[in-house]
Length: 385
Image (cartoon, rainbow, N blue to C red; front, side, top):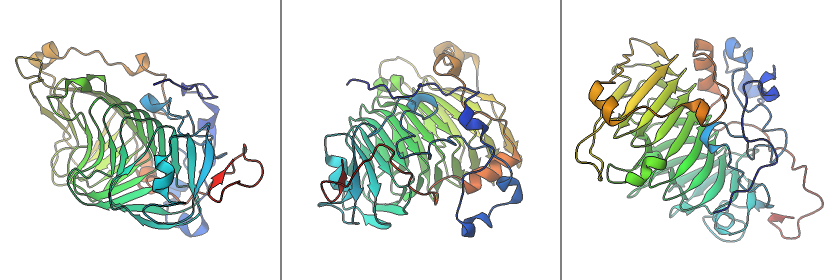
């Protein structure tokens, strides 16, 4: 699968001018009154420039998903109805083989009778509308360069029903500003050799198993997995914020509260950097859990490792390093963020950041930006050329 280079530089640098914007993103008047004054006066969220035009977010993710360009080089596809399938439906756009930037002309709930498979080089852009996908989730199978933006996915039922399922062998994926809740299985899975994924500004709620990275100890191909999760809010999800097998995962500036078992779990051969996150305990206090497992190609069990840097632990949340000599011998530390990508918008964990993540994660009432490349009227009712 060939890469397509985005028009702007891949790396997100600490002195990126877009991070210097001193005005928060504009919300409708009826939304502004619900935010604490501290949130309204403080700018801590990344991606200040991605709403400047329709395709400005292509290639602009921080972290491992930074190469994702979605439908940058394709036409604009308009979803004109809330049907599960047929002309003008979301499913019709997602199955097309050509690159597409998919936008919505309607708001409401799309009830999916089966999982919605998304093909390569697609952006599903929910800005400007309020789109809820229910019944089944999004399937990113053997695809690359997919961006999911400003959607809600909820109420999924059935075997292996995940809100967003990234497997097998998918790469260059960015899931941004989505609300995921209440599914039969997981909310987001990255497994079976999928890699180079960023999850940002998302809200996970009303669920047991939130995020799984690495399928099982038998899937040794998951050693290639690399995932960044940042500026997300895990609101009372019971476990897996995330659980990781084999992969290398960077967590930063996330807020996790009131978990039911643990916050973050490191299993077989995984390495997790937890940087400037906020962990606020409820009844359960243990933040980090370690579950040794035996990889299919090894003769004994090995554990995962977590390195905590600048994390904020609230309400007696208990950090535990869990880095014993046997684990270190079987799983020598080889993961350094600076060797993978340049520093991003990491900021100190604070109560101001905590409040911001409560209000500015998940679906947001932001307008659909203008497509500055678009000229003229569409030749087909739901396609802009």
